[in-house]
Length: 121
Image 1 (spheres, rainbow, N blue to C red):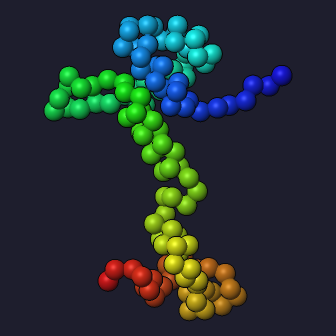
Image 2: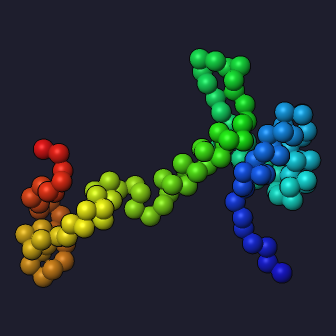
Image 3: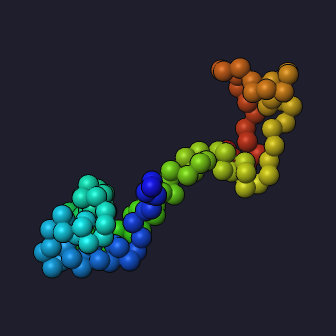
């Protein structure tokens, strides 16, 4: 039977933070959560809070880790990387015939387009 993938949730992050504070090793945490140890190491590496001005605050905090992971997932969503296309979808603006090529496709590379109607001048 094939195992399904599931992301670490807030409850698991609370347990990781509590057990790391108690000094429990990553191997034991992984065994208790029924996750691979590399998953726990990756979670700790990606979502550990670091402050250069106040290094005493450095560490793994479940709420901060959850926020960091959520922000990272939001950046990877389709269309999130392109501000121009997000603006197009939000305002319902469509390509006009001047912006399209003669046959309805995108214009050739290097062709100048008129400015977007909502773009700052």
